[in-house]
Length: 173
Image 1: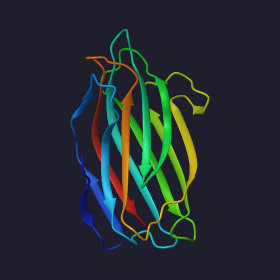
Image 2 (image 1 turned 90 degrees about the horizontal axis):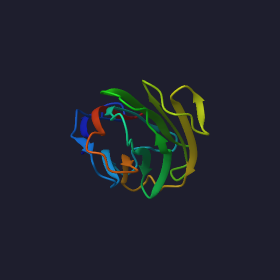
Image 3 (image 1 turned 135 degrees about the vertical axis):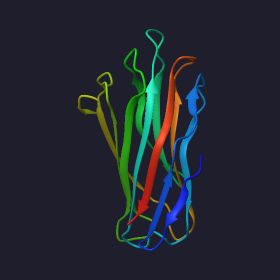
């Protein structure tokens, strides 16, 4: 699902409303995607993003969930193989973060956090109940157009588990 350009007066502002549910598939599926214009990030601008989704899980046979942030050819796996809580109904998941050029057009620092209401089973990167963070360094050439996306992937099939994108906003500031 592609983001919609809403404003370029102070950088770049994109938004995307609700999308379709990801259900009963183990394929990596895009929640949001946008191509940023060449040069929009300059030497020291940052792409900031928020993506809100809801998740529903069954009583038993709950698949794991992997969430990735992609920028050009670089990928940050924010949460890998998360064990989800049983019997969630439209529990919100919030993914937020920044990708910032660090005084160069090809050096980025990336920070992402995923939080879920209702809790996630504890993982090694847990910083609080239901909250996980990751960071990375990317080296993407932002003088050329670059694609930004957030993907989700279930670790097993389940007709009663679904992840539904609700809203996203992406800004280059």
